[in-house]
Length: 275
Image (cartoon, rainbow, N blue to C red; front, side):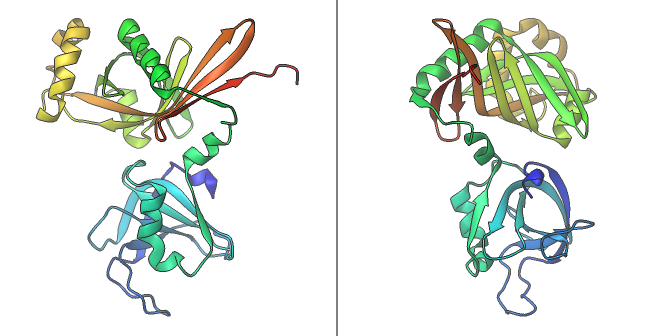
């Protein structure tokens, strides 16, 4: 089931918000359905909780933000929402407790799989974050990787940083926009720093919500601002970093430093090349 994490799925809602369970009689406070043409542990389709929607639905398309692993049942569940970072584990647990209270279950998210690799010494989060953001401000350009289905593409983009989020603009007719719209999971790279993040489409550069972007982008990338920002198809993309990894060397030893933005922690792990 973990293979579905952060994937976009289509759900048929057979138990909409406000409906009653056919056997146990409790009311569904959220929409609940299944992914057609799939098979779960009980031989039926994979079921999914839909969060963040407040009207009864018939169908729904969203991203798998978590897997509910039931330790005393053959059938795990998916948790789906329109954005990947809308809910944390405690919020998810509270919203699905109406049914999961009958089972022993744990909530598994994409970050859990990455955090398995973090078994190392803790370092100062703010110091490494400042180093990373200073580098972006100096270099001004990053390599952006996007993907859809089995096609992965990369290119340089003109970036700025505002409140630890990375911004750039692009044209709605470009491939990277289409890939981001389909799959908001992106990667960015600058020198020895690599970013794993979540991209949001924020609308035209001159919309009110992008006022801060325009002010900073105009100063940092004046040529791009004058050439592209006024164009009708131009949009702002915001990337919220989840993990940032930097490879470094000290006294001939290689190590990586990891920024965990969700938990505001940083780690250092030395590379063991003796294996």
